[in-house]
Image (cartoon, rainbow, N blue to C red; front, side, top):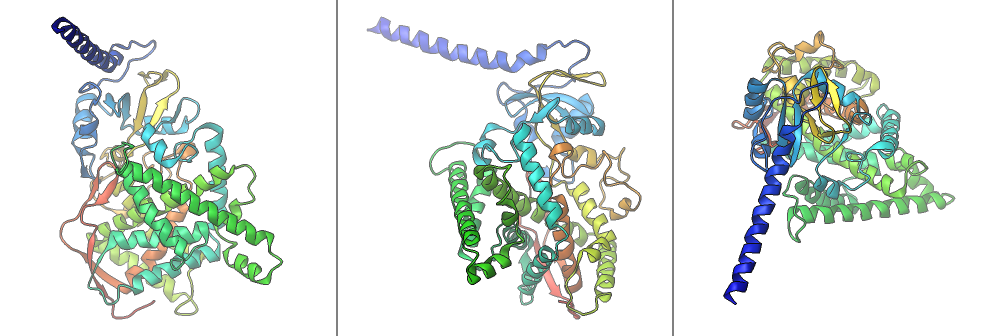
Amino acid sequence: MAEGDSCWVVVLVGGVVGFILVVVLNHFWPLLFKGKGGTVPKGSFGWPLLGETFSFLKPHSSNSVGAFLHDHCSRYGKVFKSHLFFSPTVVSCDPELNYFILQSEGKLFECSYPKPIHGILGKVSMLVAVGDTHKRLRNAALSLVTITKSKPEFLHDIENIAIQILDSWKNKPQVIFCEEARKFTFNVIVKQVLGLTPQEPETSEILEDFLTFMRGLISLPLYIPGTPYARAVQARSRISSTVKAIVEKRRAGRRNNNNDDDDNNNSKKNSDFLEILLPVDTLSEDEKVSFVLDSLLGGYETTSLLMCMVVHFLSHSPAALQQLKQEHLKIRSMKQKHDDHLDWEDYKKMEFTQYVINEALRYGNVVKFVHRKALKDVKYKGYLIPSGWKVLPVFTAVHLDPSLHANATQFHPWRWESQDPTCKKFTPFGGGSRCCPGSDLAKVEVAFFLHHLVQNFRWKTEGEDQPIAYPYVEFQRGLVLNVDPCSETTM
């Protein structure tokens, strides 16, 4: 019996040792890679399995590159190798290489986010889909944005919701601006995509599940009942069911359009994304539902964060705030009536507003980096990126590079008077075929909200609250503002 026990101990120990050896060899084997015609960038791999992931993800101010990138760029240059997210990785802080990677989507590189992200977003999400699926979804998105962005109904919805939010501040000495921004962007995107108002029961159902969904995106990817990840996957399923029910209700309304009541109902909602999306025969039903979820995600989180960045940086730049206010007072003074809606021509006059938004995107870095994978051995300027390795183009490092942007660590909107926002050194929404299709809509929403905010309120930030990259960006205290209505209201 003792001999049998000893035998099992030997087998167990041997198995453990073997597993450890496999993990160690698998981790360090890529370091021995010798390619032809190029050299793998210098760098370090860190610990087996975990690599340098924890160091890379260490929280830091979003308007800085953080200790990890600063240290590695100082030691190895702007392009280096590492081991991140369980994979050998080439990290690029070089604008030329970043541009090359983004423009080579589908040919030399493809989107490659960690598998758990797929579990939450879904297999046909535009954020993780590749090839023809991604192309069809993106074409649909670009078409919808082009149709929607200058439509009076859409612009009026944005402005009305902004006014409603700001009206609710009038008797409040203090607001948590991140919450207010999310409330604004959610109400806008739900109205824009599904034609729902805040008062409708489906809106609160979607919001509750959507918040659960968002928490799961940034959680430990363990599908164990009760964990944030598991709850997020379940929340996505519920949102999908709610959206499918809305789709069926809309289709039933279309079939019964001989009924006057249904005609009136459709006429109120025929300008939203869903109404345009329903007859599109290039997308399956699941792809249409996933498209709606992607639109909610993009229109909610990134746009609200951009709003927070703008308000935060303006609170520390009185000169920029004053010039912004003068621009919007001038636009308002040119309207025939005091309460006339803004239109597309007004938006095109918001030149300094665009400078402010661009600078918030550059300085604050809503998106820090993206995930790609090399489809084959890629040679670029003497570097070799081996097939199968992950590639991380880091936008933050380029946006804050003092050799590319004068006074890079300062918020200075006036730089955009002479700097081209379409250049390689400014990629706040990515680039190539994966450039965010909703970026123009986000800018319109922020500009219209600012139009009413700067004319109707003064504000100061409560305490020191900086945007922190985890790598997702958030304000630790929610960006608390002390607000004071202006004496002359224009709302």
